[in-house]
Image (tube, rainbow, N blue to C red):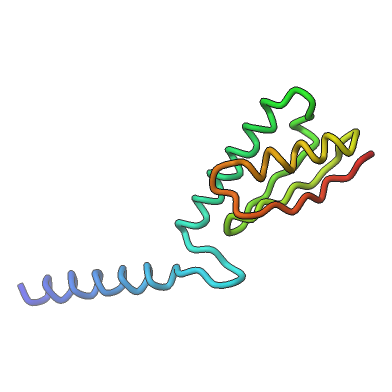
Length: 103
């Protein structure tokens, strides 16, 4: 019985250390932040897809700690501005880096 108790205590301690080891730093995300950023990326992509003036397949969206970066190509400055505005008004977005290039 003591062996079983020691094993449970060991596994519980290992799990606790694993969870604490998943904290974020300036250059890495925690698991929760990763999933939050994935949700933000999905929402921005969906909003861009709904905008008829934008070509969804020419715009790449990446998110890190709530900061969205738009990259790719658009046909006009207005399209670049529209994509930036859409990203900035999406729930959860803290800031936007609009690196879209007008072709």
